[in-house]
Length: 93
Image 1 (tube, rainbow, N blue to C red):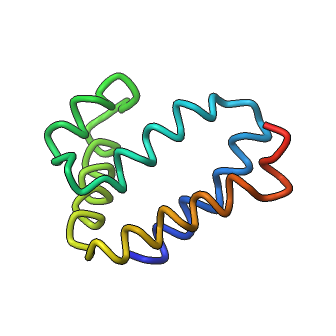
Image 2 (cartoon, rainbow, N blue to C red):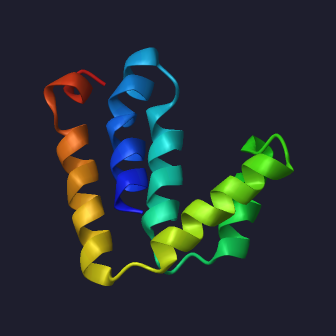
């Protein structure tokens, strides 16, 4: 689970660099991390970006992984996210 989070968050600077809507990606990451957003709400909010059933299953699996983490772990993921956003590579965006 922690590997998934690290891989997802390390990809953020690349998305920002490519000019692919950092605000939208930020909202998706925040919804993924937020323990108050359940799986149904999460999928409903992302439905337009899910091209098929397999992708939807992957997003459900990822959200469930985050829901099974402690508050402390989720806070640490948010700190990592902010560190990435404050990094040299994302500072320009």
